[in-house]
Image (cartoon, rainbow, N blue to C red; front, side, top):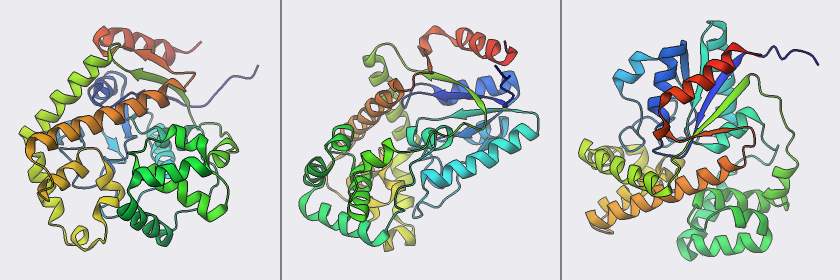
Length: 318
């Protein structure tokens, strides 16, 4: 059997609030690495506190890539991420450094490490039509429509996940072919690197929920609502016909903060809604991660030594 000569990389995966950022920073310092963010919120400028973006000290301590690459009124696809990430990975390897992929956006990991189906590209006009329908009928009604035309996709997509509902309906209306069929027919790509996939996830769901609530309260104390007020004041966002349908503002917490500042509900309800949305995101992330057959799972409470030993063995090679 021929030797696999691809460069090595570490993927630090896991649900939101599981401690990925801190661990990625730790191993980057220990093993001479640079971090490639795999997070669909961190790509946007201005989404800092609510997206748990690494602060200035963290960014200065370890080189980071694919953070702040788009303005919040711009789109950024998984295909664009994969192309940008491959370039960043090649540069890191050329410098003799260890690439560390860190984040929780499953679609980004899939685009980079497995490839995406060559399905129809986004159609802004059709997306606007679907968004208008959602405004009239509600996303649960559109989810019910998706269940009629693509029950397999509807079973995976939650009725409160407008971005994925919109994309699935868009693909079906453009092609007449369910997105689940497109995804099944996707060619499997050979990753450009040999990747050790590590999943950080608390063994007890209650512990993850506690971490989510504690982190959100810390965000509020750091000025998350002031950050949201600054975003709302941007002329480009104010001019958007449906700002809450922009990918950046679909990030958990931001939609709820916008609605709170609109006066739709009070501070306590805002907090409850944002924490609930974050828990739902974590649930979807865990579902996706369970499908990664070659991933190794670790409880963050077990301490960094266990994880560092796994990394050291991987880097040492056979």
